[in-house]
Length: 164
Image (tube, rainbow, N blue to C red; front, side, top):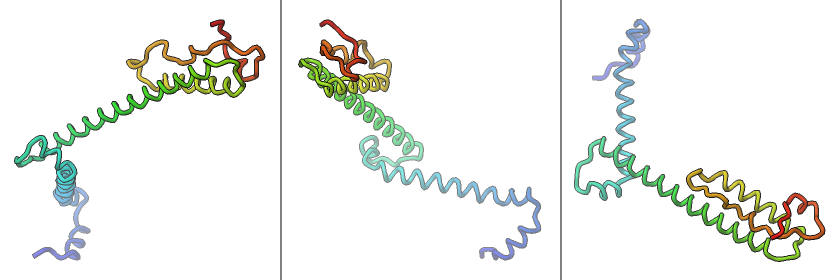
């Protein structure tokens, strides 16, 4: 039969702190192991398809569950990185084409100059967010900027004049 709670409380009051810790330690350890086992079971349920792919028809040990979970997370991280790089390169290509289009036609309007300036800033920010390994010089579409209009507006005054 399980001990009475009131009896345990009275006994607990009479024990020294060191003795209390000795009594609590196995209970705390069991709770910790139960949490670990529960989390491993949750991983097993969440990654059931991965287990079938890696080790079909085999009884999985806890270490196996953890290894497959780590492998799956690494794979997902690599896929997310590749997706981000594809998105970033597409964005930069679109930005470059928009810059080329805006700088190609004359005469430039103030709005056109403002857009070019904005896109140059956006390109600079995009260059900073790329890792040094993926950067190449010069990638900035700002090099496509053509002649400045004869009458300089406030927005166009900040851009460098190029004779080509």
